[in-house]
Image: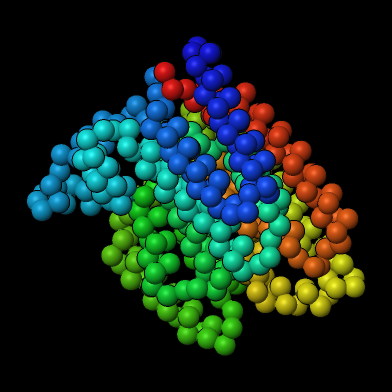
Length: 384
């Protein structure tokens, strides 16, 4: 069905990715092709024509409904706040009033990929990263084929991008305070999967993620933040838990959503991530690695620990309930970009091993891209 339009759609996606992968190492200011690529992805969202049954065909009527509400009307506010995901409702209200419903996937792609690519830009300011490695990790992430989840599913990828950005800032750049935890609340109020990811992160952060002399003070601050959030937002937390329970019930009754090729793509990402973490913990250059290990453990140990913690949880979750584990694996795919770069710039690993790792990631990326274009959700991309 729509074979030719879909071939054109995935062909454009794959071609753009290969072009950007080629240009980044050969461009002095590599952020320029990356920014152009972001706009190109957003334009693909703007001109995307959903097929019958697509998430976007169900979202557009909701967008039009929320656009009719007035923010200065208490009754409208009551409806928005009672929606279960009030930040998503406000998001739909704002974009629904732009006059063209196609602005929703356009803006969502700009925000989502802008946040994802911000991780690359930020880490390159902290570490001396080869441009070929930037291109490689971009290829790996984009080969997962999450464009359809960004321009059609809308909420989940946006919430995961916000969570990933906050985790990077808190665990790698060691920035905290109200700003990033407030952003985590926003992500949690966009989609139930975002709520689940935030809850896992908060548990990890309280137990293991917070380091340094002010650990007790910061932990108490986070706990107070969590308690206050629960007091004022417990209804949303309960709704998210109920949603997860519904997913689990559907799965046990064999009536829930399941797609084997997306399951395969998610498992590949999960196992590649576990392999990278295994490399991080076991493969040490004996000449420089032991000295670097102590330094890197202090700086990036919390992030590596979270990635292991979260990936193992997701590995279990995806076998128990596909819908939950599948969505959480998108967060892993985003965070794999800084994870891979930290491995590739580290002095802990011999250059010969990095060479093999680069080749392995390149091969896996093209396998992912092939599956995503031929059988994944990405294969429904079309513009007519």
